[in-house]
Length: 297
Image (cartoon, rainbow, N blue to C red):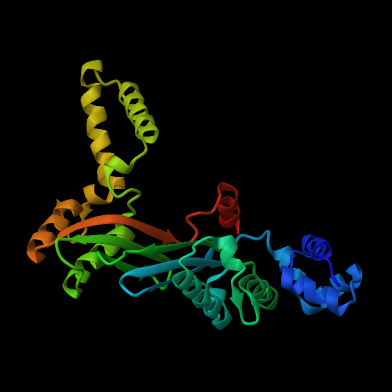
């Protein structure tokens, strides 16, 4: 019987998934060196060498039924591979797993059963077969419940995606509200908000921004007596840029998103509000080191 410790050692030495390591050891009757050779012959051990390369392209996969919704960002090194059927099949399977389970933890997602093994094994096999590094960078899941509505919008062939969870009070969610939710998704994709409202900005973050604005005003040589007003104005500008409800509505820049929601609520005799949202853009979560490497390529 192959021990878990032996399987773990082979995984650490090759970077190959646990199930493939176990099969290799069973095939080679527990001989570590033969198992390594076996994995190399199968092309699986080469996947470990590719793991250090930057997966800066890919697709955001999404699924929603209007109440529940899921997003998964699956990355690869080139646009060409993102169009590969195997890559897309795996991405669709991943988002289906998140949608079904409600679990957006990437580590647990990789252990999800798939095609007789796991998602991790399928990913490793795909890396070995295609010859590019790939990674599941993140996943998201929303459940709007009985009094809410979701909208999911995927832009640019999967390069950017947004999912918004909208509460519908004083009446049940219905199809006539869906265009409003979709407008908010479009807004999120186009305007890149960070928070729903200004109240959601952490106090320490807001205070740090105020200190920066104060220093900027002083360095610009502004009179001390008008600096507080300048800081206040720049804080309002920050809200307009980063807070969804304070942003100018992309379809009518004379009003804010907050006003748009209020107007649509009155029109449909409902009270509409944004519970939360998520926005994924391919490559935006790269570390500074990864970004530098990607730029150099």
